[in-house]
Image 1 (tube, rainbow, N blue to C red):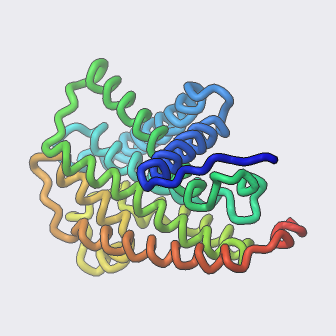
Image 2 (image 1 turned 45 degrees about the horizontal axis):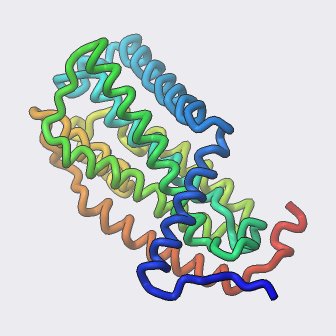
Image 3 (image 1 turned 30 degrees about the horizontal axis):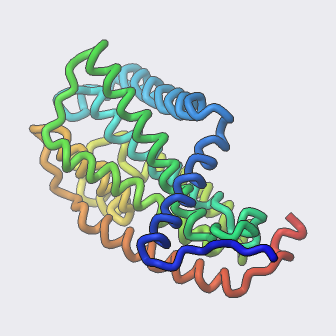
Length: 273
């Protein structure tokens, strides 16, 4: 009696998938606030508070002169904004709807759409916030000059992608060990406050300290981003290829874990939580 028309051609299937992902992404953006503009505004305010805090901290400690010669605000942005985008991607992917979520009762929805919408909504909000901040700096403070725009943008996307990859691994583990994953996520975010290298220049670190940070893909990404941003800075201790390969590996690992988790999905997972 009731029939639902389903697309059969490849083009129609792809279009339907993209349409569902778009609407799920819009829903994800509006979860922060019913008004999408205010949701972006809250993200912008968070970023500005971080930048202002570190700006005053560097000035009070007298370490501003130890930064890279050039636009000091850009130096802060290449560290703080990549860090914020990375950890926000981790958090949003971890919050994505799982196979037992009520959203999965809708026929077009699946966990892949939920993961993609969480990732794209984070990128959308953070990208707009970054562009607004750069525009304000360029107009009100001093001209923004980035040595290699394409390279800097690639590092920004890699910071977002690596955050999504880490979040995907956490998401696959969450149904099996929810308490452990919540603690691991908190430890990872807190550790990256220092281990990301956003507060110092990697080239100035002594050799014995490099080994304490070079395990972290975000450390490589931030240092490489500064190399693309400033004309007089050349990273010697990092490379973006390491971060790229780690990201690809974590994505594959996370997708395998998600596939295994979906096969063993149970509504009782959330019974006591």
